[in-house]
Length: 75
Length: 75
Image 1 (tube, rainbow over the protein chains, first blue to last red):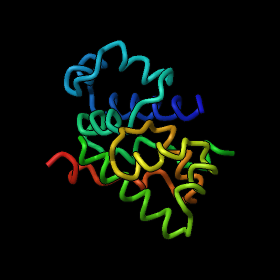
Image 2 (cartoon, chains in turn brown, blue):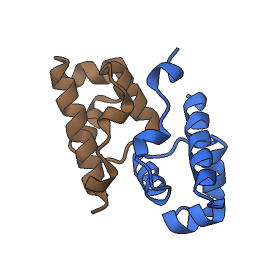
Image 3 (cartoon, each protein chain N blue to C red):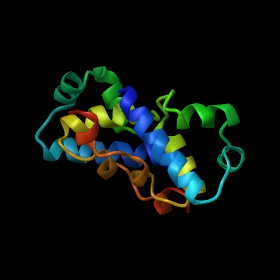
């Protein structure tokens, strides 16, 4: 399931950059620890649904858009 | 954010019943502890994205369909 964490991290990073935010901005605005944001984007942690929502709120998107399709995870 | 856990739990329960599965079936097939499945459905725990995928695979749906819209959570 590392693949899942990596896929979610990449989507968060992509969306963050598209919004012109730094990791510091995302950490500050979401209330998530700055180094943890880095670990999330590198796919090193399996985040909770709650953190997914906190991040999605800052990135102004639906949490679902930060999730890869299930067929890409369970091949 | 209890509201989020409750909303996700309700969607999982609804989908599980629509698939004609018991909590025992879902627990067995997803590899998640039986009592934890009950707590998830009652909205008592904040599950990880990984568990969301394990559950969605058993329920034959996209994980995104088990997530409420962000506007329903952050009013």
